[in-house]
Image 1: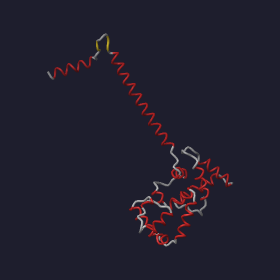
Image 2: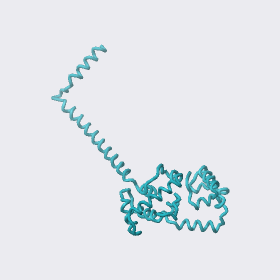
Image 3: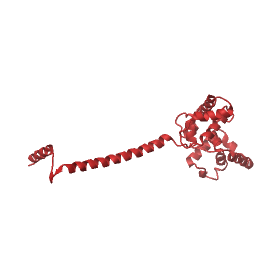
Image 4: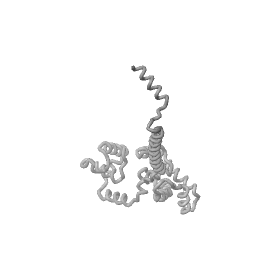
Amino acid sequence: MKELSLEKQIYLCKYHEIDNCLHLGITAKERDEILTKLKQNGLYEQYRKLEEDEYENIIKNEKSKDKYEKILEKYKFDKTSKGYNNLKQVLVMCNKYNTTEFSMERIYKQVAAGENVENYIIRNDCQRLLDNTYQLNKEIFEQNEYHRKPSVKEFMCRELSIESTNTKNEEINVKVEEKNEESTEKSTETNINTQFIADIDNTYVKVPVKIIAEWAYQKRIFR
């Protein structure tokens, strides 16, 4: 089931009876599943009864959040928990990379320097918070294609759409292999042509004795 932002959840609860809400980026089936879930956890009535000014304030607050807060909120990371701010800082610093060829230890070191603590404290706090959040909200992670508990780096790369260097290397290897195969085919063809030409001597074609013997045998059988 697809997850909706808080703003979209409230809109769905308030207006689903007069609007099919498919413009929220969900199917009719997903809409019904989300409504059922919100009714089960008691949020449906709470969102539905919000006054318009309250709703507008929520929308305003949502829009003021940066993308890092939205990522962490999507998986329900506890803002009051130890390590939340450090994890967000790590997320911000990872965002400057385009491929996975970067060192998490270097990032932990930079964050630790700002907090005046040891590197391992930042590393442990981030991994512990991610592990705990995964255990509490495993369903949300699975909905977002996490099939096992991720490391901090795996989480950062996926959420920030940082391209895997393995994927790039695989593409390069495929191209190299295709080029090598093409070269091999051309080389083989050249060798065959060269061999054929070499077997012609003074307008006479040299044919191996084995082929002549097989031809004679076949001719005798089918005579």
